[in-house]
Length: 138
Image (cartoon, rainbow, N blue to C red; front, side, top):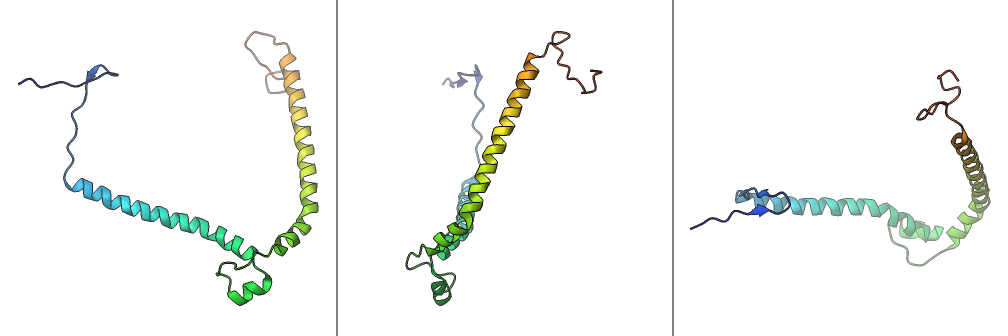
């Protein structure tokens, strides 16, 4: 009886024989699969608990936090906390946006002007990009 030789079509050489794993390898893999799923679930809970905690407490009234406890979920929506917080943040946030927009505009304009000036500079030799004052002797 002839044995068939499997040839890898991409490599053009015979494929390596399949490695036979011991019988216990599957059990170990299944055990670690459950362990990794459990670890992933713990990480998800630890990641999302603070987010749920903060959102839940932000939707409670001040009296509701003290009467029902900090770790209980909200029972009614109270948007007064958000309006109070926004009234104290809106002016500084607007100032921050104006300063950020102005600095971005100034920085991009200066970078574009510098890039244009650098691109129009004549080089003394082809392939050399000497920058004046960079230690090359000017």
